[in-house]
Amino acid sequence: MEQCCQVNMIIPLDGAEDCSSSVDETSEPHDKMMCTLECKLKSLGLLNGDDLVEAKVQEYIDRLEGDWKGTAKTIATECITTITEMKKKIQERDHDMKCSPVGAFFMMCLMKHTQAKCPEDKWQNTSFCNKMRSGECFPKRGRQ
Image (cartoon, rainbow, N blue to C red; front, side):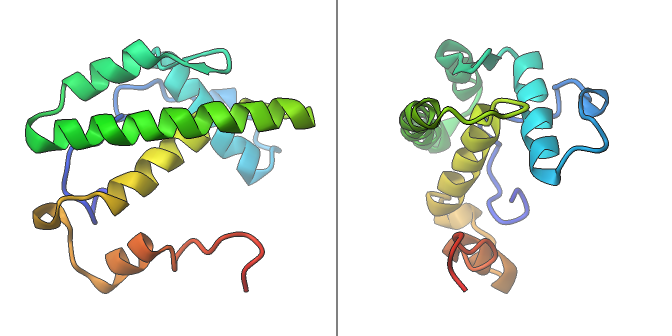
């Protein structure tokens, strides 16, 4: 993602704990991703249980500069709204999950919206990046 949109990440994970030991090697790949992101976001203070810590998200946005800071705030607000609605649906369906999907969905939402709203002068106009932006690399479930 960073290779396509040359802006500072809204939530950089480089300061997070390693978290590889928190994941059972026999877990499904989906669970591994969710559990690792849950651990990393908790280590950064961005997740408290199943809840995003909005004040901490804002701290990360405040570290950004220029026009990207305003765009990042819009993206984060949209993603927080999406996650809040998603959590209600998950609770209604009473899914039994090993780890909370909130962190993974939030980070995926940030990535998707960053691609969509990437400033043109920061976008790498390559075939790969344009496929990523259009969703061609990640078709929606149920599509052939």
